[in-house]
Length: 500
Image 1 (cartoon, one colour):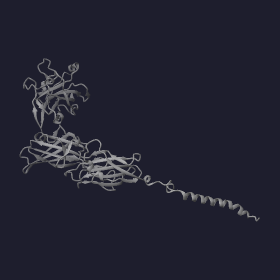
Image 2 (cartoon, rainbow, N blue to C red):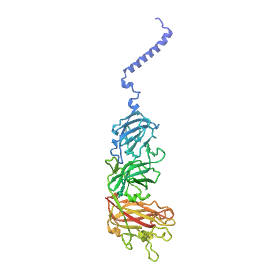
Image 3 (tube, helix red, strand yellow):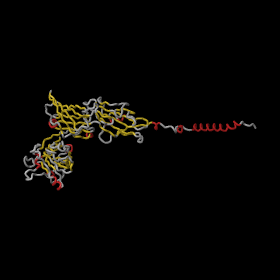
Image 4 (cartoon, one colour):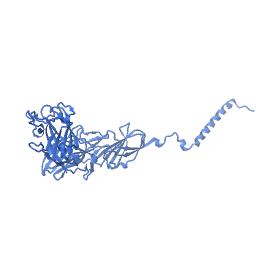
């Protein structure tokens, strides 16, 4: 038998084994199906992510907002630059975003109708800090709503935009009993924002607040406006209005400041006789606010409360006790008297004297708060309005001289139609509101005029003949809030309102 060379004897088994192993591996791979071959490769669902925006207004009134035109931005949380973007004529026309998995946020700008005087970046070049600017403040502004949602990988693919915020407010203003010779009225509303960013933060495009000019509509002897507008500067405590009255070729301006501001997502209302509003440079009555969900769309394209057509009229209500002048429609639950009982101090509430002279500065009402406390009662005023009314304005003056005495801080105001309540023998009063005075500073507010503004009885839907005013807390002469009701008041006057 022929011997094999030593090298052949050594290499052949190893080489054969290696070849056998290669064949076996190829055989195994060739026998795998397609699914097994992709076991270690991620599929498309793992690489890409469908983000489906869904509009769910939730609380508040956003009826019909799903039909507004929408600009939808998708921002990557690692960057302020827009990652994806689309526009549609309504929310239902939007399509899903298909993106790589990451952390995102959705921002939706919903606009009631397209107008050329709203300027904002509607493209992939948008950033989270971009502003929406109103370039023509005098034009009719549409409703604007901003919605946001955080996109989390753990939630799924459907993301409801629930955090909706209305960016505009509405102004409802009516002047009644306007003189017949007035042809038209223009109104300039000053101190307004003209821009808001995609985070909902307001500002001024030029660094300064702007104004909006509105042409009031005529309705007989009344002029009114129903207008959507940007909110007023939140850093200011009042809003300046300039009414421009045209009588033929002549015009006259009346400048009025209204306490309070014009907020977003609210109806801001002011109504009254033209003479009452235009004669005052500072109206302490302030605005009245109504929720946006009380609105209805009307033919002029604006939005207004469904009870806008109500007309409020007012007249002064002279008050006194049974003595001269003898109206016998007012009394105070208690008051101090002079040492000889010759003067009852509650008469100072309606003696007509407004004077800080040495002769008159100490003519003020002070309740017998000690006796009231011992009896478990609260110092109060009782008023007979003469007939059922739908509203009341209470105006009073702090004590004159020095630090101004002890000032009313809070006052509960009740209504009733029972004579027995007014006479103090019954207690079926219905709480209307609690008034809080802001004129309580020591010295500065001595002799200050304080007004509740028009107190509406259930927005004009309720009528009361009798009213009770409870002094529930005070600020002492040094400016400290005190729980008791030992107040000093120099004079009080009443105005009653009827609503039709």
